[in-house]
Image 1 (cartoon, one colour):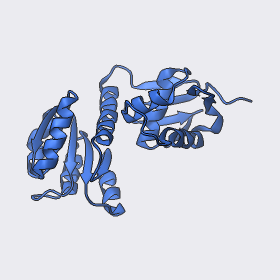
Image 2 (cartoon, rainbow, N blue to C red):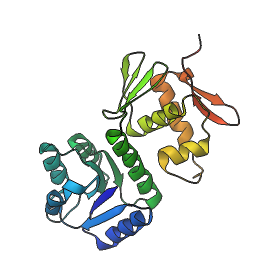
Image 3 (spheres, rainbow, N blue to C red):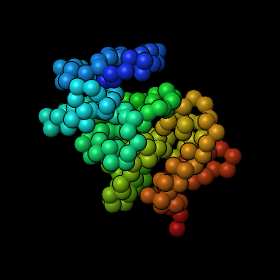
Length: 222
């Protein structure tokens, strides 16, 4: 996957470029927002700093989307204000990270965007398990014909469960598939997001298998 890093701080850009290159990504670094438009054609993912010196990153994002460009954008921002984050998402950002962030967290987000990229270019654009159906391109979900709205991470978790087709998935497998983590960070993030999915889909659709993990059930029990 070709990644375009748009970052004016050389230290951060070097950190991102070296780290992603070490994991097999083809990385190009530019430090000006205006240069994005000349580079976007061969890009699969843009890591876009919102605090650029020549043009605001939100303006770059706005212009890309107004031109009909749907290249995935992961916004990087030191702005902790909620309004900036919401504006970026409303303009079409696919995800965001607030600086400072750990590289492992960035890598997990990049891998999630890569899975979405593969889904949109692969031969199959839909998955189904029982009465739960997922459109991989539109990233929409239906349960018994009713639309269910999920966050990006909830969607990735549900897709992982559907891919398993009812098989039990361990905590380690879920951390690897959804968060890109090859180790257990010692948090309850898996349990929290399983809880979120249960609220969206129905509590009995995701079963806990004691001592092993979780699995998606075909239908809730009577």
